[in-house]
Image 1: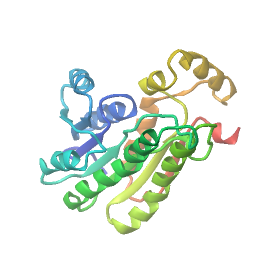
Image 2 (image 1 turned 30 degrees about the vertical axis):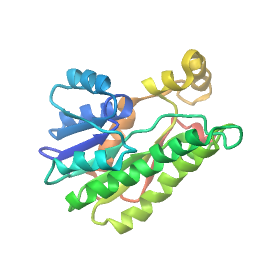
Image 3 (image 1 turned 120 degrees about the horizontal axis):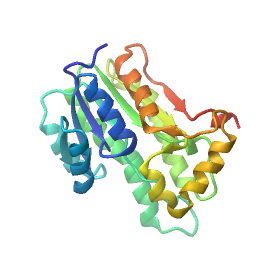
Image 4 (image 1 turned 45 degrees about the horizontal axis):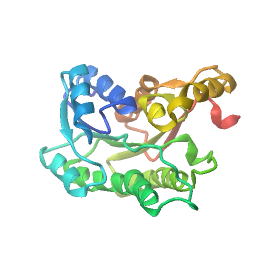
Length: 236
């Protein structure tokens, strides 16, 4: 299936995996709109990819997401690549932080799906999850739960929304700006230590994840799947 002339909406498209996917779909001939909550990041992304449309909206705001999709009469493919990494410890954590994780990682997905699907007769919806869905770490309980929830949601929605296809890409450690925000000064140490134990001795790139996302958009026989792209870390 060609993406030439297809309308692609990338929620969380102003940086990292979302931006890489926006670039690759644009190069494949799609009409691409990126959605994000930071005006500055959207402006930088549009300067980097002058062919894309940029719209501001917070994924946790159902009304704002609704207005994004109200601007279109049809949508062919949607990528949801939004959500930060937060302290997900259930105990000794403030409730607002825990609720924000749920809002970003689960309700945000719900907001996008409910707004996008009335405009879709086929095509695909792709979510991004994360390696902690199956490899939790201390302090990740709520985040792990929400990542797992998104992975469980996809096959159920693949049945509910057919013939629209629904899939999940679950990246391992990927070198994106998200690492800077999540780990700060510990970022380089974390990347080096993880790379040392991976079979390929390196972490992944946003472009490599984006290649898998494009596969899920263009292969008409893939639906309800969770595709892990983690450099083999789940085997270690």
